[in-house]
Structures are given as C-alpha cells and as structure tokens.
Amino acid sequence: MAQNNRGQIKLAKSKGKMTKQMQAEFNAKRVRFMDSDVNHIAEISKAGGTYDLLETINDKVVGISDFHSNKLEAGVNVAVERIKLGYGKAATAGNPEVKDISFSSLASAFPDVLKRAKLILKQDNKTLLRLPVEAFTHGAASTKTQGEEDAKELGVMPVLIEQKPIEIQLEFGSGTAMEKGDDDHYLQVRFLGTETAAK
Image 1 (tube, rainbow, N blue to C red):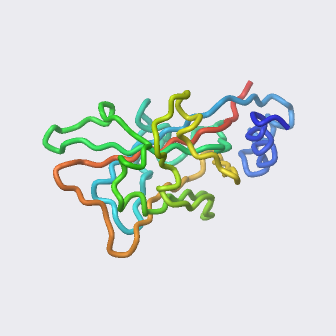
Image 2: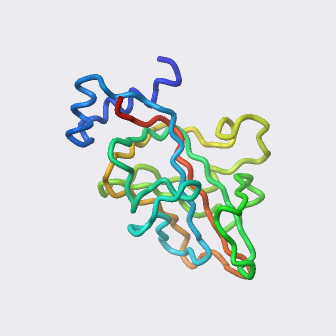
C-alpha cells in the first residue's frame, strides 16, 4: 500500500467506533478523505504533575485550537500519522496574545523539565499515546515543508473519534514543574494525518 493510504485504511478499520451516521456514510461509500492538521495551543506556565492541555471549556478558534470543548466536530475522525510539538514563550509583562507567539520544535528551545515530561493522549478512558516530549523535538531546523522532517511519525496510529471527549495531557516527574519566572510558557500540539469528510 502507498504511504499516503495508511490513514485511510486505519480510519476504515475504525468505522465501528464512529457515529451511526458516519458508519452509514462509509457503508454507502460517501466518505472522502482529506489531509489533516489538528492544532491546539495551551498555556503551560503553571504546569506540573498531570496537567490537562485540553479543557472541557475550550473554544474553537482558528489558529489557536481546532477543538470545540474537548471534542472533534461531527464528521471529523482523524488518523494521527505524525505529531508536531512546538514550544513558545512571551514576557508576561507584555500581556502576550497567543496568535503573536512563535513556536519552535528545536530541542534547544524546550526547557529541560518540559523535555522530560510525557505527552499523553486519551479517548474513551484508553491511553492512545504516551511518549516523552523530547521524542518530538529536533536537533536542527528543517529546510523542508513544515511537518515533513520536524514532526514525529508514529509507528502505531491513534484514531481520534468525532464528538467523544479527548484528553491531551503533560505528565511531569515527581517534584518537577514549569518555572514561570518573567515569561508565560505555551505548548503547541499538532496532529497530522488523515481525516474523514462527508462527500
């Protein structure tokens, strides 16, 4: 199978977990597939212990978060083939706006305490992914299209199902936490892969 079909195959195999409407769309062969880039940015200035990046009161805002509450919209099911993390910070005194913050996936940009934390992804009370943040960082800036070299390709693709609560968390080691200092800290999480869309 061609590499770009992996996500489509995974989604088709997962259709039994989707809504009855989406299952009917699959059975009638009315589902189409699109490249997916699901983005979420969270402030992590006070992060420690197990810290929720995605909250139930989250608002969907273009460029900041593609989640409405802590769910994907109806009809959107995502096979996550790659994950890209970005770290950014801004001086607290400047009342920073998230849209103005630059994010980097370079290992040198991430605080050590953040690199040692685990990124956890859950849905339906099942852990779909649990890897160190450092695994998503890179040693050198990529010269290719964003997401080609600076995103981690996953051996096992998690599938995020429409309209079901999703948990994205950071788990810090015992006694460790982000140090706020004079800066606010932010983490950008991008799920790259394939998503469903009705024809």
